[in-house]
Amino acid sequence: MSAWIIWAIICVIALLLELTSGDCFLLCISLACACTAGVAGAGAGWVVQVVVACVISLILLLLLRPQLIKWMHMGEDKRVSNADALIGRVGVVSEEIDQNGFGRVAIDGDDWKAQSQDGSAIAKGQRVEIISRDSIIVIVKTI
Image (cartoon, rainbow, N blue to C red; front, side, top):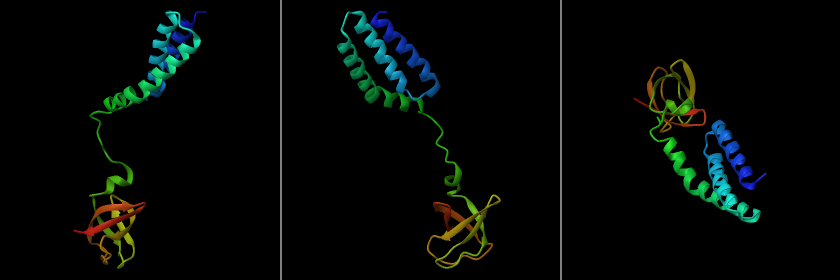
C-alpha cells in the first residue's frame, strides 16, 4: 500500500473522530495528515513524511486551533449558572446574621449560609442583596 494512502486513511479517521469531540484538535491533525499525504505522493521518504506531519500539526495546533475555538464560541451567551447566578439577587434574612458571624438568607426557596459585607448584624426579615460568595457562603448587604 502506498504511503500517501496510509496518510489519507489517517486523515479521514481523524476527521471522523473530530466529529465526536468538536475541539478542533483532531482537525489540525487531519489537515497535517492531508498535507503529508501530498508530500508522500511526491515521493518523499518516511523520515521527511513524519517530520512534515509533526511540524504542520504543531503549527496548526498553535496558530489555527485557538482562532477556530474563538470563532466557534463567538457570540455565545455568557450566562452565569449555579451559585454565581445568585450575585445581584435580593433575598430575605431567614435567620439573624450575627455581628462578625453568620446567619441564613432565603432566595427563591433556597436557604443559604450568609455573612454581612461589613460584619454588622442583620435582623431576621431584612431584605438583603447578594454581592459575592465564598464557596457556599453568600456575602450580603442590606438594601
